[in-house]
View 1 (tube, helix red, strand yellow):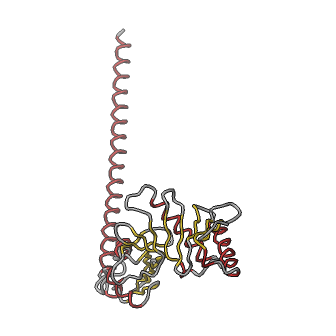
View 2 (cartoon, one colour; view 1 turned 135 degrees about the horizontal axis):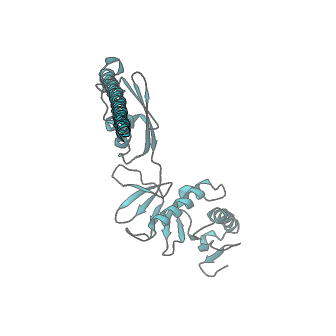
View 3 (tube, one colour; view 1 turned 120 degrees about the horizontal axis):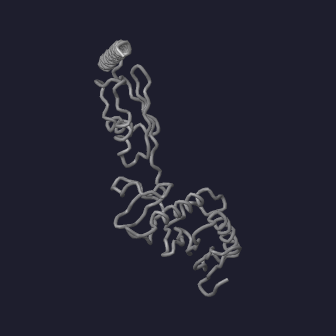
Length: 275
């Protein structure tokens, strides 16, 4: 019994030594890992400080100051306005220019549809501008200019051009107004491209009916033309042929209206009868 007690005691001592060794080894590995982590963070911090210092140095470098701003896409008379809107001065570094802010500032101009800004190191900034192109005047609570996508991009000022067809029949806040304006824009684009149509300058007014159908009036023609809501290319082409026929038969002056909203024909209403 005494021998067994001694052996058990020695076994416990060995287990204790083994446990201490394992603890010391674990503690050493943990300490080594912490040292490696500390060194990594130290290097990362030093690198960040170096990059920030380098950025500040380059941002203040004279040879990176904006020397030239090249503006394309607009007339010369508007280039100065674009540069002023950009907010850039010759004290700014090309590297530190906030490109998104410059783009946003320029696009606040009502006559500028979109702008793109690029750097050309070491000292040139390029600004490409896309100018708004109005195709109609829309009469709502005020008069607005509309672009080729059916978007109202500004209300009309005293110096704005107004020699465009006028769009009537809509009210501010009308349900579906955006859809109606896109339909009008589609009609106008199709009309301007159609070789068989009357000259575009003859368009006077486009009236949007409650259901969205379009009735068109002309400057030099005595009638209105009803185009419905779709298939404008075919209807415009047919209208051109009908107008030619009416001229050739000397009946154009008697025409009151032409309804093109039929599948295969147009219905002409004269002052005294309908054909």
